[in-house]
Length: 342
Image (tube, rainbow, N blue to C red; front, side, top):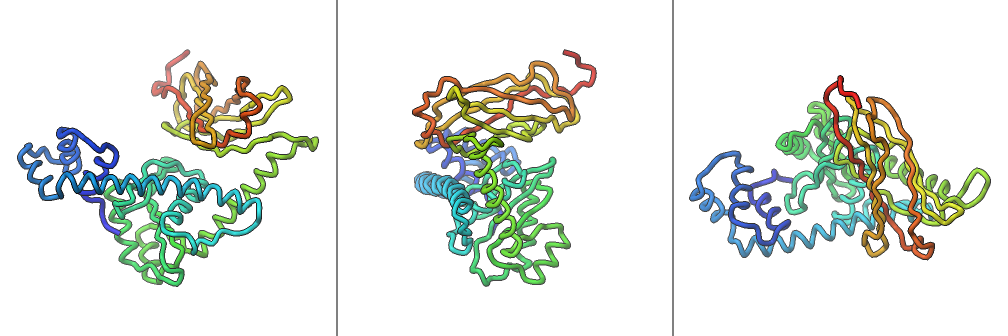
């Protein structure tokens, strides 16, 4: 584990854009160093890092690795579903490092955390940053030998790196265990340490919840079939004031796909013009249907709840089985003045 460096930052830029312009590269260096260096000094700094050709080669490798990570996250979701169906537990010790990190990300986000930032794998630093209740949390997933013991030095270093990202708290997860000094250090500096004995119950709870949800998808109170498809759920929160507290979907007797649920404004101020954007994806990863729905044209006050529902009537029945994921995003305008009336 090491701190995120200037080299990592420049490499991340090339990974996201294989041919960045010179001004963008220099601006990236200045922003990272937080100094208004002249162009000549920026050029010298870049020369000391590594050649541009090497950066491009390593950036290509980084893109391939990040694609592998995205694939691992989809595999983990499938393994959670399979474990819920078959009852066969997931052996976290058999997972490689990328899959273990994907599993820990899935677990943390399943407990009402929202993703803020995912660090590039080549950074060898924290894995991702999440937030809940306005608390910014740095998460580290350390895949080790099952008999290994994480020491206090790693715990303190994790706190130092988290401070660089202005995180409020830290969670370290491992498939191994922490030694006594690490446990003491974690308690002293306020770090949550989750070893194998603590992470397995969290994973099992998710699997049990998934098993219950899958049963609910199949059974109505009258014993009929409520759903004939199963889709992964992805909720995106560009803003975090309004939260989804319930969402469901069903195929009606008219063979239409219907979504319904409930939203709540958890903020201290009202929001205006609350909308839902939902995208449906097929098994090839293509977005095949999109719908924008206005939930509330006026104000949704603080702590107020509102129901929503919308229908995809344009989907042919033959395409139901090809749908595998839906992504839902909330859009609204924040209101900061108490005396605004609409």
